Amino acid sequence: MELISDIVINLLAHRIGVCVLGLITGGRFKGESGFAWGCAVAVGCVVLFAPFAAFIAWLIYTDGR
Image 1 (spheres, rainbow, N blue to C red):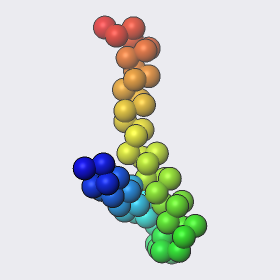
Image 2: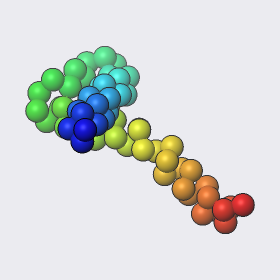
Image 3: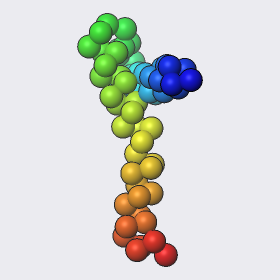
């Protein structure tokens, strides 16, 4: 089960990262080579986990009310 979730999160993060980096570069980024794949996954993970980090920061800011 862990393997399936890793694959799903990895592919989802890659697709999101390719979309974001493609928007930034004007469509030239493809994310196919090894280094580009890693960059796309890193950007995708940041985009995926940003709402959770913002929610935790909001809870800390409002003291959990």
